[in-house]
Length: 273
Image (tube, rainbow, N blue to C red):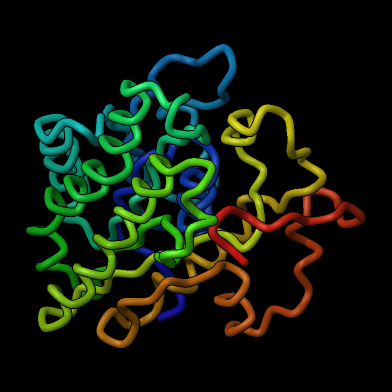
């Protein structure tokens, strides 16, 4: 399978950034996209709403449904999943993209921020997949794709932001468990992570330390996601993919097209050696 035409993707955090890029790539195939996120009204500092993203998806050739979802709230998720199933007849793919970031040490991590990261990253990923599971079981080629890093227990990935690392690794451990749990019924569970820093709104959380010229575009993650999601689910599960590794497997050799500035120095992302 080389296309997502007719497939229904439930994508959390799809109003901007990597989530929206994955949605737009699938839309070019003619996929159905559920834009599941919280942003209804435009934010003064963050671009995009569920409605503006849905409009872009429709313009790209897809079919969009914008639903207001807080991934921490199972009732909110249940309502969003029900709307998706009613509109598109089911759900084939779940993309756990929604994530909260706060790169602070232990003393500087407010418990409110700790709870937000654990709630969105770990609980939200688990709850979203749980809510969509009945429909994934009925899908022809079901996939769960989670935007989380390879879980390597190396102290330097925890040292400067223990809480954030725990929350992201929690997402990865979900992938590890689901790949084994759902293997017999053919639901794929994989993780995808960028090798380099991606130019998204999350850059603001780095306090201006990283410039866009040091980054790649979200398109590289979107193209890698597309390559994964079009593979047979029974033959592709339990992997912790890096975006450029996936694309190299697809025959891509020139990655300069993904650079914000082809002449800039591209920097590695967190959790990548």
